[in-house]
Image 1 (cartoon, rainbow, N blue to C red):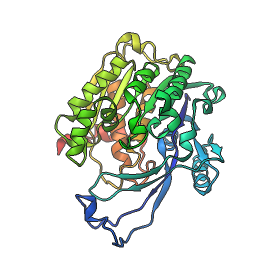
Image 2 (image 1 turned 120 degrees about the vertical axis):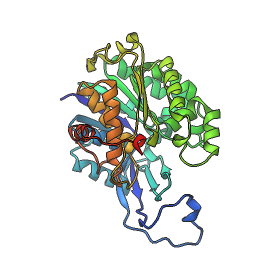
Image 3 (image 1 turned 90 degrees about the horizontal axis):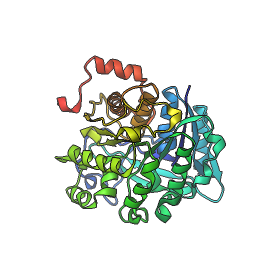
Image 4 (image 1 turned 180 degrees about the horizontal axis):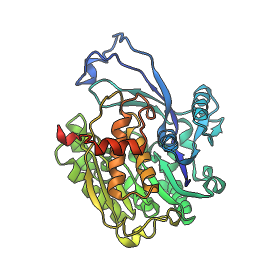
Length: 372
């Protein structure tokens, strides 16, 4: 079994369950000052890239090492106990920090709203990823530098040093982003410069459209944000995502998968020379991963409880398919399928299906959003 290391952001996700009485079109239809809203029991689970993608990889049958950081507090204890249920560990406890948490407002009919505290994630640095943890790994996945202060400050010096070092060990590297608050310190960071420095050491880059557009095309992002609602449902989004993916390849990464919500996914792979430099421990065939491109539609979900962690879980399916020797097209297809399956649960992990089951459903005619 091939070893994967997942590192970066981890938190506790608290999702209040709204009564399934109706769907809303605007937040102020429900959240009104002075109003008491009757709620169901809260869903409390681990969140963040380390837990969502890391545990999803473990559920899908991979050998996974988790590297994240919590505080020495009640939330940290909950995070540790949840990971222990999956036979996972590897967390660093920083007694000087609090444990990161997110309150996820999954209001029916409205895209999720996150109330987030970064906590100990802000102190995570390259030094927290030790060589002994990387020993024997074929793949290293890192998630959410936009909500990890040490990773984006000083033009991403810590992030770049980390990826440069891991890549020098022959380990393939994978990077996921997170949404950026434009008014925050992270929103003022030089993301174009950060990506320009880290992508030459990034083999697989898997951001969402919103995240990537914010960093590479701020005028387009602002224009789409002004329209309100889900920007990935706007006309021309897939074409814009493909253009941004091509820019990322030009900046130095080998493979790009842009997650575009209900519109699907866009994937691109670079030239043969860059494919040949994917971490040698992974032993990929450069010919298969050279100059491929396509659009993968989103599959129709049977039940929708919450989209929390769907992107992280889709990445886990992609990376598992990758390790199984699938092509870029099939990797993207299985990623989209797992994302659609995962929304049947309020947490990121409850709806995960084995890749064989996803393939069976696809072969049996699983419809995509294009069929609506």
